[in-house]
Length: 256
Image (cartoon, rainbow, N blue to C red; front, side, top):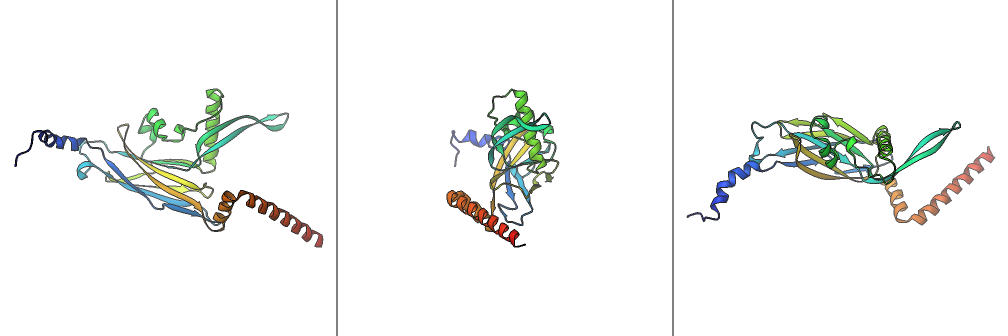
């Protein structure tokens, strides 16, 4: 059986094409769903996976690749106000609003991110706290926006909602990787994403995403769903409950 002329060049070029094929990431996470109850004190997520290279082995003679894992929460609109002391009294001064700040952001890497990629690549993929695209809506000068941006990141860091962990990703035999990300007790609910990036020689070679659902459970979930789906009834019940508890507290105080 002879090989037709149109097919022959493809067969001859197959080894070269295989050599140019890019590696593929196969990521996973220990929990695809995190339930928050009244006793929730936080959770540890294990993000792990494998790097599949063409031919099934790490290319000989190439520098080892690095892994960066980014866990993001739903974006939210945030209004940040700056306090100023006037005549001994703290009052609101300047303010800035951000349209799409992540409610949670945690990045772990096998090496410091600044050693892996340049500023442009960090900005494109939002790798690192200094590369977050917060989307400010104000028309303040760039230096003012930068000051408010740093303030927002610092506030989130203090609350444990923004975390940067260099050298927190372990890579075994250049193929298997793992990292732990802590979910704090004050984490917001919603659809989270766990993004994994494979980086070598300053370039992102592969990327993959897994979703994580963080939701309330038990009575907390019932209250949250009631507030979301039946706003008027929820508001009336909350007011009636507050009035009832206030009346009960006054009655107890008069009896004592």
